[in-house]
Length: 205
Image 1 (cartoon, rainbow, N blue to C red):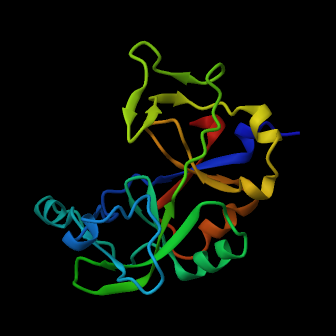
Image 2 (spheres, helix red, strand yellow):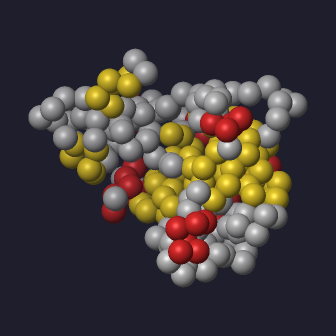
């Protein structure tokens, strides 16, 4: 049987300067959109490319085709097709809110959904993982977060939870709060124009 570190992938933004560097507009940035659920019918979140002027100044061309996945830090904007596939899985604590990305050419791309996890899943082993211990954790929002260099899962904890309830989650207890995906549903995030993302096996992080 594969180790858990071989079964899960971290979703990370690809190394490409042309990929939009997202920033929320004023109305969106005034909300706790990255960890709260918003009611159906509330206004969409709005994003633009904060790196547009830098890219223009440095001769970095704008992407002609906007990726199906865009990153806001470690959080994702995904296409409607991906959202529909995720809804069928009933992922715990995952909420998706309609979002708009305004590209460098001024075109509005309205087929996006912002993935919000209202709770994180702290499932890495303090005994087996490689993390910065000397200074202790950083306290943020009532949580103790560590800088983790290499993740090893708490095998006993994962064994106690059905796989269907841990297919996709936001890593808890770590400053680098990545979104982590089980290999069985990785294909969802590989559909469409996905040149903006790379999939790193936890074992290889």
